Length: 204
Length: 204
DNA sequence: TGTACATCAGTGAACGCGCGTTCACTGATGTAC
DNA sequence: TGTACATCAGTGAACGCGCGTTCACTGATGTAC
Image 1: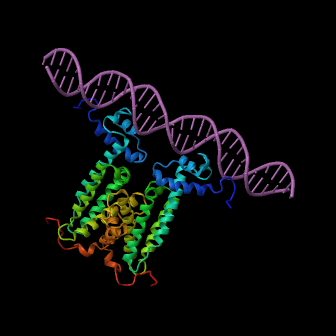
Image 2: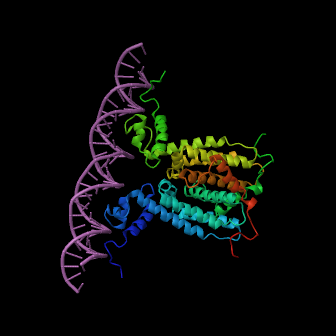
Image 3: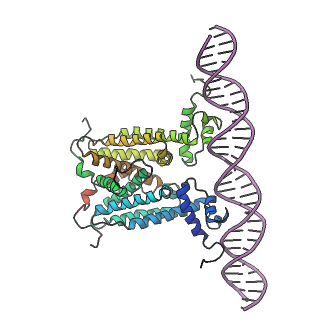
């Protein structure tokens, strides 16, 4: 039943699949075009029929990564805005933990320059805004700023957790930890002297 | 007056200086040991007298980067905790904008594995905790979580700004933009339905 | 103070490697008539 | 339906490159007596 189609069948897809796997194994930095071709079972230069060069392949990989992230974030749900906001960060961190090297690739320089990847990244931001869902009743500028903050929080927390610089308490799951950090951050006003009153560590 | 000392004088320091400069020029990924040696004016293998291998040099560079960041964050100041917290993120983002590739190196994998760099990174976290200064009167666990959030926010916002995924509004400076995002995030409770009340975009 | 020796920080040449990319090619597929 | 031809997706060999690292070495520096 295997489709014995034209030559390889669908080499572009096969290269992207192999590339996505290899990126996790070798790291985004050390990924080589040759190894991707090897993994897809074709000669070293076959990819050049479908991708202009190595960066082009990397960009395509990053785009798929962004699409994956958008799909995951779209699932975020919750009664309150706070719940949804926590869910967004949890889902983002989950992505980063499952695909750490893809996450690194998406944070890398390929993604700043290529317009197609920038567009894909913008879609991530849009997905976050949609998932948090603040548009209706809030100051639009402040809501946008908050969503940028949530994105940054997602990004940063993912980075720090993946790198092992921060981690859940003993016996605490990742999701619970993330929820705790996000809540403490967005509710900082609740337990912190915000304005007017004397700060805790200033001599004055 | 130039010290005509033993051979080079202080090659380790010269290599670190050259390395720090080259990292910004070539990018942390593409930095080669040979180019650092070249820039320091010594032969390709001279660095091996002082660093075990390339990773060892990269680790040392990252440690210096962390120390720089600690110094910068230590300067954070403000009457209220909120001001200090905003200042920390501003200083962190400034660092990332001035030394984007060093920032990338510090977010990279060299820094997860080497104990010396992990220690240097822990110092960054400690510097943030110190600068925010919440210890005295707050729930210690929630204060720690908030500081982790601030670190993540710093990290993530830096990443997104450096990559060009987010940016200040027209006519708005970086510091003002960062302040706006951080405030919107830590004061989310202020203008957002936090609990109990119906969310904005849920059918229910 | 002089001298013999150990140490140490450099040099220059060389290694093997895997890489990205190009070249000329081949043979399968699609298509016009 | 058959045929001639264009297109297209692969192959295999080769290129030049810069890399990390090793080797045997040299000559400056430090030190014990």
